[in-house]
Image 1 (cartoon, rainbow, N blue to C red):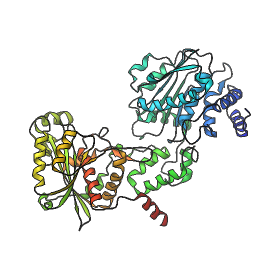
Image 2: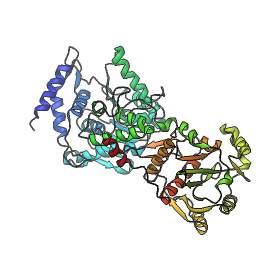
Image 3: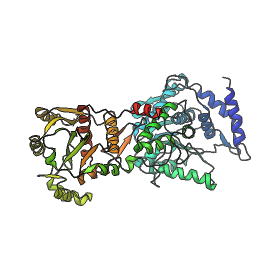
Image 4: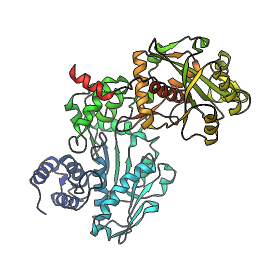
Amino acid sequence: MALKKWIVDKIEDLKLKWNDEEYFFDEEEAEKIWRFIGKLKNDKGTSSRFEIIGFQFEIITEILCVKDRECRRRKHREVHINMARKNGKSFIIAIIITYLFFCQPKIRGAIFILTANDVKQAGELFDTVCYFIETNRTLRKHCHFVKSKRLVIRNKTRNKLMVLSSDASGADSYSDYVACLDEIHESKDDMMYGKLGTGQGAWNDPLLITITTASSGEDEKNLEQQLYTRCKKIEMEGLNDPTFYYRIYEADKGCDIEDQRQWEKANPGIDVFRSRKDIEVMAKKAKLMPLQENMFRRMFLIQHVALDGEKGAINMDLWDNCTKEIEFDSLKGLSCWNGLDLSSKYDVTAFIQVFYDELMDKFIIWPHLFTPKDTVMKREEEEKIPYSKWIKQGDLIALPGKYINFELLMDYVYELEKDFEFKESGFDRWGSPTILNRLEEKWDIVPMGQGMQTMTPIINDFECMLIDERMIIADNECFRFMAKNCVAVFDDAMNVKYSKKKSRFKIDGIVGMLMGLCLAIDANKINHYDMLGALDKLERM
């Protein structure tokens, strides 16, 4: 297979860059790698043919082809790659692993380990490598798969490729030759990194790879932050670390998020792996919704900023602006839409009423929060949370017993219905079928999801209503505490939900509010926040 001109030119550039008295760029190996890549098939995208681009070839060959003149071993034994998502970095690593797995005939009994924050995440990289192998007849015949264990074994050399749990407790037993830790910004600690690194001592030229996007930058112990700091010390202070190779693609600190030159700095695969139009839409959305700007900077520009969710998903200044002292009796006679979120029966659960005042064009939020009375003091001592104070103030309702008695809770809600017209009530569609049937006997119940598909539009509405002060939130310290401790999670498309798992306190009241608010908005024919319309309006300004 003849080399393309740009490959020839790139190899010449890399020889000029790396050749000196101590090291050289192995031109023959680089050509071999390019031909090897040409035999692989793509497992993602619109074409099965794999087209590698310049920055990918450069990274791969700088890792594998820069060698010591004396012993001819690879110069680089540790690699750190930090760039925005959807820029092809997983392909880079999958190619390196596949190449080393098959093209190192003298390496026998080697272990190749893939790990990430969870097995599913690491499994995605494993699946890409497996696809490369399974769709190539030559590679396929030299190994066998144990898919149930996420394991590939070379028949002749007995080299093994495996996925390892993020739990580092079992990592001590492996003498790994190549290890890759994916999305290390999410790592809880650096134990896996340390154990896999020290486990490579038996090999002459092992490879430890970390790939990631940016972390918050606020935790010095975060593995991504540690490695980022190490890279910057090499750049700024001339720290001598010859076996360490890194590539960080990041925008300038404090840059304009709509500056396309900055997008290109953090997204080397823009226009190929990542759509420029996609980034443009996300940038404009972040401009329109300031609460999401930090997320854009971190996910798309690789800037170390804490996401709103990590600091608290809800802007408490805006929340407090909407908080008022309300007389509950003044709401009697109004129609309401409700959200019932039944948490664990041992802590706090919520029934939230959402009213719509047509004259003011505002939504009024009144929370009813419940907790088991008999365990209040024990939980208050363990959790350092002022349950008894909230109960005394009337912000939290203590129900007799060691757990929340559903019958007592329902008796309370039945009394409420005497003074209010219940229109619709939202209930978690994955909640108890028995409770759902009971509720449906009495009220118009709307089963609702709590995933990103359901929650993204209503959270967008909620944020905009906070900004525009189109909400009146009853003053309640327990409810405010829930809001303050809410943590948001995002996906690559900037969809969002509030995470019960990651939040620092129970947020059932907030989830219940969102369900009730969603029903109230739809019933009163209030337009949802129109992202496309807002973008069109912005274009015309």
